[in-house]
Amino acid sequence: MTTHEELFNALRENFPPSLREEGWYLTTASSLVATGKVDSLASLYLYLTSLSQFSTSDQRKCLSRRLREVLLKEWILVGIPLVVSALAALARVEKEEDTVGFEK
Image 1 (cartoon, rainbow, N blue to C red):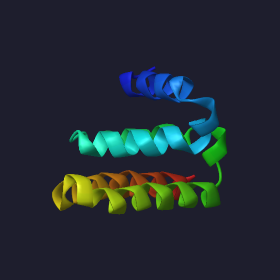
Image 2: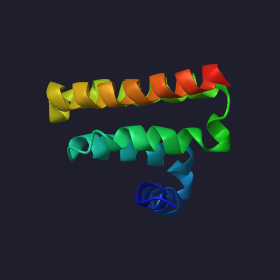
Image 3: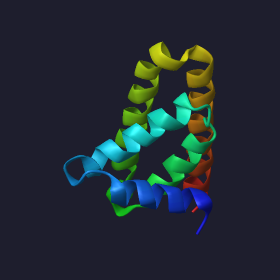
Image 4: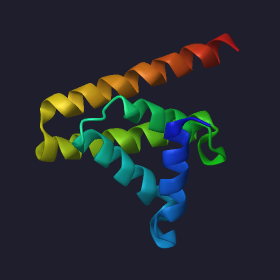
């Protein structure tokens, strides 16, 4: 298990149960960008897509949309450069995932 996986598991398990389903990963994504860890957003996306709740193409599209909404709202707080970098990291990992999925 990688360090990111351990971190994401811990965050998910320690988040308040009433907000756990979606709140933990949206807050985590926002925090990663706010602290300048924009490349870790790609790791979060990969972690999330390994979960059963994001196993279908439609679920992944919804996940991607939710993460992008968070980023677009966050640019007011952290500035455009960090958000653009995060969007690029997210797009890169989505493209890689689509390529791998296409080859299967």
